[in-house]
Image (cartoon, rainbow, N blue to C red; front, top):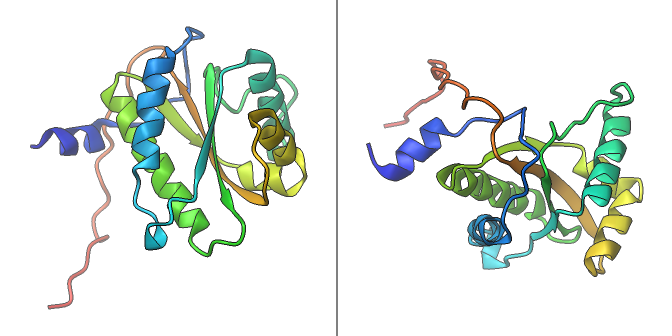
Length: 175
């Protein structure tokens, strides 16, 4: 099995993180993998906003919790110290797909580097209700963006989850 296939098969969504800070050098490598994702017509439109400021990270978590309808005190980012927010311009037809590939690449690179991730939804709702404007402003970004997703990022608390067998009947050929 190739090293890439090993990473693809072993990567799992993590839902319990240590509070240890992730070095900026590792965050930069993960983001680099994201910005090298394929994009429609090669436009390279998704942006990645790395949130390492604990107070603002907690504010995003609280907004996400409210949108998700969870009880007060629940952290939809499972304690991850870093949130990577992926957004893309509203006027690009492939924004959601391009941003999804960005997130996928970052998840694989993080696993390769010994870090855990979990793709967290509700970024779209955050950007639709105006909270995304605050995220963009904090990052010094202007423009009309849609939220694609968040990547909870950090060191895994406990063991990496087992590989779950893939379901049959999902591949078809037309010969």
